[in-house]
Length: 66
Image (cartoon, rainbow, N blue to C red; front, top):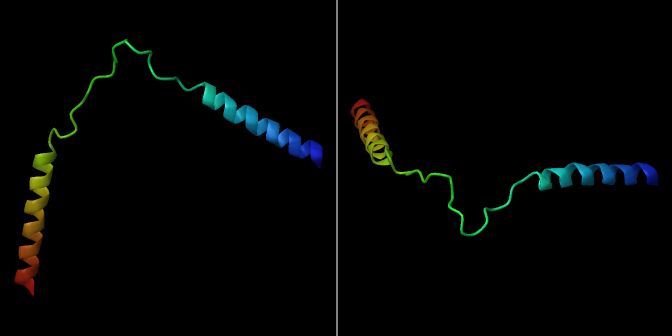
């Protein structure tokens, strides 16, 4: 029983330690970051406006049917 428990713990340790080593660390200080900054709010205004308009249309149709 003890050998089975020890081998399971050793297997899990090797499995997870290799995954942790495979991850890259942060870039060294002073070097430029190669990832471009992308704006998140590109078309959010249009999406928000379309949602408001759709909500108003659905609300007006529901009120007319009652």
